[in-house]
Structures are given as structure tokens and as C-alpha cells.
Image 1 (tube, helix red, strand yellow):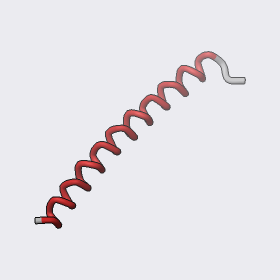
Image 2 (image 1 turned 30 degrees about the horizontal axis):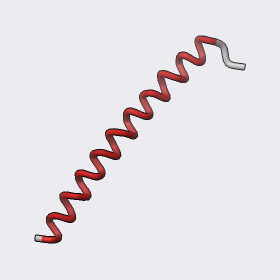
Image 3 (image 1 turned 30 degrees about the vertical axis):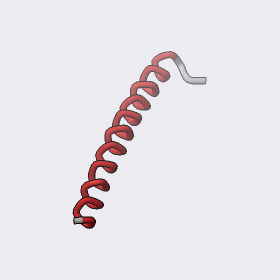
Image 4 (image 1 turned 180 degrees about the horizontal axis):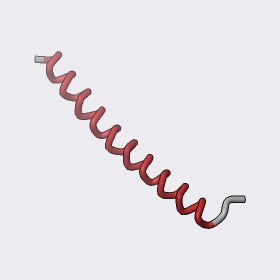
Length: 41
């Protein structure tokens, strides 16, 4: 089993991954909407 220190490190890494994933998704949606807008006009 992982020790307490390892779990803190793992949770910190996971939170960073989730933050990056969230902002990446938001940015991708914005870029996709912009491309659709360009194609439609």
C-alpha cells in the first residue's frame, strides 16, 4: 500500500491533471466554435 506521503503526492498530481484536462477541454470547445463560425461565414 502507498504511504501517506505518496498519497499526498498522487492526489496533487491528479488534481493538476484534472485542472489541465478541464482547461484543455474548454479551450478546445472555444477553438472548435471559432472554426465553425469561420466556416459558416
